[in-house]
Length: 571
Image (cartoon, rainbow, N blue to C red):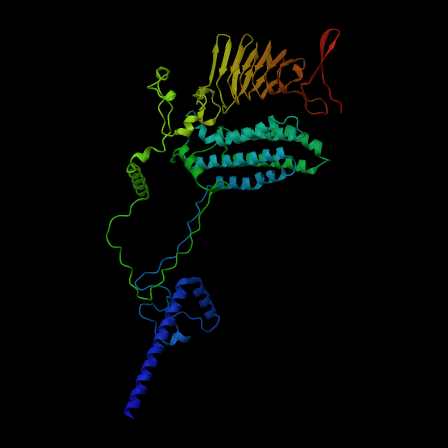
């Protein structure tokens, strides 16, 4: 009886031990699941609060494992956290830097009026879409310049580094103007002229005093072309009317923005950093409308899974020689091949080429007198030497190369305006922020050369003007006694308010001549020119009239002489 009782006790003891081991394994499996899925634990907790049974975490009072204590080393109520390790604090997303109010308003303008203008140009014409895209980029460049002004000190506008702040803006504004100048014969030339005239409003960034008034003047110039579009499409296509009105709204919104935030010009941060440095930092930061993008912090990584197998880490490798590098092994193999070839004895010369006696220099003095044998290059072998190398071409001088890597960097000259006797000399100006005004007299003449994107205003009556190699030059003249000579100056424009006898154009690609009531008798002579337009003043009930100069000439023989006539197109 005692033996039976003992056997029953041993069986009961083994059964109890088995149950404990099964419960410990179940607890560990639950710990693994909770450590690998924190989100699943939170769902379980929510389910428990709604009364769903069997969803308590380890250490709770319900479920199969709830009636037993948690295994050693695990914290009750904190599933998946290893003993002795503190809980990781929640990671907060970095706060987005607060932008100045003026920049926030510029973002609203870009997202509002600029986006509406771009949208209104879609589907009208490919040129208009291209030009509106350049306008939107120019406004984003303006926003970037204003953001730099909030972080940097006012730069020296005469320093060589200052143009770097405006290079993107000047490029996009130039793109808008180039689209206008290159497509003067297109049906949407008035649209392009309106936008090209209005984009100069962004030059307010370089003006002091009252820049909003300047934007108002530019708006008036753009309306001269825009009103023609409204008149032509008022009853035909309302999309063109919407396009013009959205551009008017954009310029008016810019004027209101400048009047509110920069009534006396752009302001700078006296305690800021260098302007060029701030501009480069703005370039390197990812932006949306120029605003930095704040990155959201993700959840912390889950803790590593515990090792339940109690398997020790593998021992370190035994000390020994370092592994042989791949290059060293290859080099050793090459040397072995060399030694094996040398050990072949006389067989090593079996692969050599047999040389005829006529090719041996020691038996033919004429070969020795022919010249020195050229040295063999490392990359040559018997195959490449047998081919004709051909004449070697020498590189062109740096000044004659056309690629961007060999462009000669010319030093920028300082603009010059001086009176030498009775002659004004104006040269080497490139996009000055304000027009150049000169008081002239009857005996004085002017020589203008190498001026780019420059506006010159002459006050008074002068004798004559000579213009050479000055692209995108704009000239306002009251009265001249003699003439205006223009040579190799594309996209030239002149406006005469008084009288002028003669205008002579030579090799000019694109020019606009604005005549007044007193200058209708002006004669225009052209040679090797294209895209020349003359704008006549408005008459009663009509707007200004723009007329192109003829470019097609018909020549034929009549009576032994050549006769040339202008080709006129009917219809």
